[in-house]
Image (cartoon, rainbow over all chains, first blue to last red; front, top):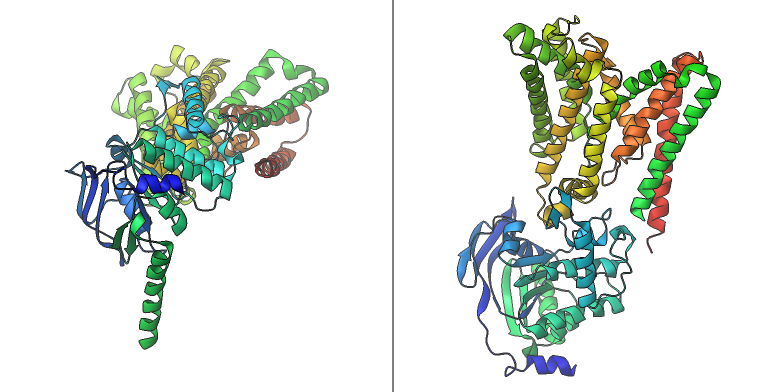
Length: 268
Length: 319
C-alpha cells in the first residue's frame, strides 16, 4: 500500500498538538472493573487504533470519552484543558462524536432523520425536513457514499454496510475534532469495509480530525492507523507507531496473553 | 415507503369506517340522520382523545392502563374544587387538569426512574385512582357545578358537536406533533431503539414521562367533557376499564403497533369512529349489544394479525 507508506513517513507527519489526553482513567460497574488505569494520548489529525480482547474495556473507554458514561476517577484533557463530559450532547459540543458499535440508528426513521437525530434542523415548531433531506443528500455524496438511492428511505431497509456508512457519515457531518469509531468494520462485506476504510483514509489525508478506531482485524488497523494501542485488563499495555509493529507482533501479543492466562489457570 | 405503509394502514381503517356507514345506512334509515350522527360523534370523541395519548405512549414503547380512571377522577376533582373549596369553575377545570398531569408524572417517574414496567405501574395506579374516586365520592354520583351550567358546559362537551370539534383539534395537533416535530421524532426513536436514542443524546426519560403526562391530561380533559355531556359526574364514568380499553382498541385497530416505534394518531381516530359506528349501528338494526364485543375482539385480532403480516413483509423487503 504505497499511499499508506507515504502517509506513515515521519517527515510527512510532524508531531502535532495533543487534542486528547486521558490520565489514570478508571471505571467500575458494580463488582466488575472495566477500566483500571488508562493513559492515552491522541494528536491532531492522528488515527489511533485501539485493539484488545473482548471485555478488555474498549467500548467502555469509548463510552466514557463520548460522555455516555462518567469515569470513577482520572482526567480527560481536550487541547490540554481538563474537561468533565456531562453527557453525549456536551461531548459533541466539545467536538467529540461517536459511531457506536450498535450504530444507534432508528430503523423506523428515514436516512436523513437518522443523520440529524437529536440535532434536527427546525423551523419552530416544525422540523425542517426539506433542509435536512438536502443536507443529508449532499453529505453522503461528498463522502462518496453513492449506494443509497434516496435519503427518504427507512433505515430498516438498508444493508448492514449502508447502515454503517450512514452512522459514519452522521458523525463526520458534525465537523467533530475527535471521532470515536467503535468497530466500524464489524460485520461488513469486503466492498463495504473498503468504503469505510476509504472514508478514514480521506479523513486522515485532510489531517483536521483525529480518530480513535476500535477494530479486530489487525491488518486493517495497520493499514489505516498511525499508531496502535492495546488495551488489556483495563490498562493500555502497548503503544507503538503502526510502522514499527506488524500483524505478527500484535497477534502474538494477544495470543501470549491468552496462553499466559491459560497456564495460569492450569497451575491454579 | 414506510410512510406509504402507514398511510395504507390508515386507509384500510378508513375503508372499513366508510363501508360500515354504507352498510348501516342501507340497513337503517336513521343512521345518517342529524341526531344519530351526533350520537356517533359523541360516542367516538372521548375514546379518540384518550387514544391520541395512548398512541404517543405505545409509539414510545409504553402503555397507560390508568388513563380510564383519570378520566373518571378529573370531573370529581373539578367538582371538589368548586363545590367544597369555592374555586371558580375555569380555574377548577385547570386544577383538575394539572392534578391529572401529576398522576401522569408519577406514572412516568415510576416507570423511568424506578424501572417498573409501565403495564404494572399503571395497573397499580388504576386501582389507586379507583380507590380515590370511590372513597371520596362515597360511590355516589355528583352534580355538575352550578357555575358550569350554560355556555361552559355546552362548549366543553354538552353541545352537539363540541366533543367532536375538540377531538378533531386534538387529533390534528398531535398528528403534527408526532410526524413533524422533534418531540414526535424523538418519541419514535425512543420506542424504536431505546439504547440508540440514548446514545444519540436524546433525553429518553423526558420523552417518556412527557408522554405519560400528555396522556393523563388528555384523559382528564375527555373525562370532564364527558361529565358535562351526560350532565352528571359518575364514579363509574367510562366504566373504569372501558375508556382505557376502547382507547387501546382504537389505537391498535388504527394501525399502531404495541412494539413501539410506529403509530398513527389519525388511525386511532378512525379506529374510535369504527368502534362507535359498530356499537351505534348494532343498536339501530336491533342486534343486541352483546355481539358487539365479539366484533370488537375479532377486529382487534384481525388488525393485529394484519400488522404482523405487514411488518414481516416489510422486513422481507429490506434486502
